Length: 128
Image (cartoon, rainbow, N blue to C red):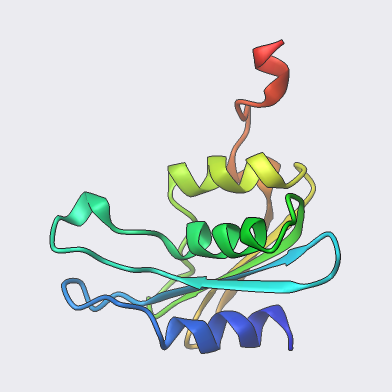
C-alpha cells in the first residue's frame, strides 16, 4: 500500500466530532513498513492527538525509531502542514532530508523536507 493510500484510508477513521476536520498521516519506517495514524479529538481540545503523532506512536510501538517518508492528508482547500509540535516529533525520528508530502482530499500536493518545515530544529546534539 502506498503512503498516500494509507493516509487517505486512515483519515476516514479519524475521531473529529468537534471540528469535523479529519486528518490522516502515514509514515514509512526504515524497514519499509508503513504506519498510519489519524487525529483523535477530545472535548477538552488541547488533549487531542494529531495524526502524525499517532503514526509515530504506531511505528515506535512496532519497534522502529527511524522514519524515511511522510504523507499527510486533510479535507482542506490547501495542503495542511504538520503543527509545530508534530514537526518536532517528526524531526526526532527523521533526518532533515526526509520528504514530507502534504495533500488535500481534492488532489493538491505540496512537498517539503523536514529541514524546510523545521529549520533550526532542536536535536539531541543540543543536549551534549
